[in-house]
Length: 433
Image 1 (tube, rainbow, N blue to C red):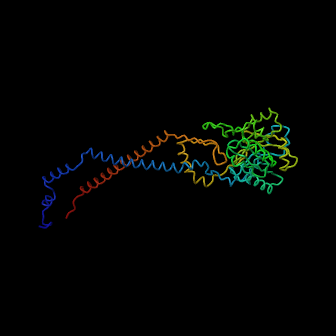
Image 2: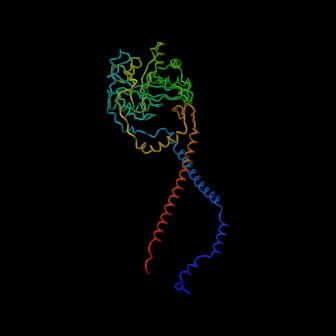
């Protein structure tokens, strides 16, 4: 019998299983079906596995980011500012609001900066820029003292002679720098190098030999920023320059003078020592110690009979100097613009700062000989790291729960839609044949 010749009741009857078949199938299904608690346990293990994978991925990503970003943070310099584009087209006249410490020098004609750095050591300005910057700050004479090299001073001197002859004087020098002392060697034409075995920790005899070599070139040896050098680095527990010679020892070794003002710091104890010991032969200097453009605080003033390097040095050697000092700094200045490199790396630098919040590193003073004067101390904040792991686990769990909830909502919406469509289809009237 063909399908068309069958009656509808017969088709329905044949298509439905018998009661015995249904009962047998139900028994077989119950035999092979897992208990409900095992099904739940299997689903929980599946969810747990997914959460574990997410946690592992997140922790691995955090570890990789730390490995990549910590060196960026430790480099400590990604060139935030573009100093090369700065134009120092402003001027400062400190005589407008300051008077010399010694009124006898009120008729000065030289304003000298006795301590400055260029890009040939750790400064941000080229020798040429440094000259322009000094002019803007109200100086008409400048001692360039890059760390352990006179090259920056010689380059700045050539530039000043070519562009500002008779109006601005550069005196070449260098800052003899190590873990024991920072000492300006002024009015020299060749780098004064210590012995090869002196390095970061020169002996007393080595320092005396450097002073003698400076004098042999006709230069002066000036001890710099004693308060900065002898300040105790609290966490490291040592002075910034360990074993810094005493003022008395330095005088015995033939030092010519001391820097009594460095930036905004006035070294009153050293000045009092010079006065108390009637050290009329000792000279005092002031210095901006400029590494990057900023405020000027002090100007060494003197009156030279003629405006030449030789005349200025003669007045300094004779001790006929005074100074202007303003602890708040001058009012003029220009802010540099951000460098393109910094803007490109700023997002990574911000992330690096966050990674660095999980530890503190106390770095010793750089020796300018490829090492540091103290051993670094690193304190890892293990509790903060533990909290970070907890936050990552919590985020992974919440993400998985949100995913499951979204799936359930989606399932319910789809089920409701299908049921609604099915009901609307059944409710439609049958079309006549």
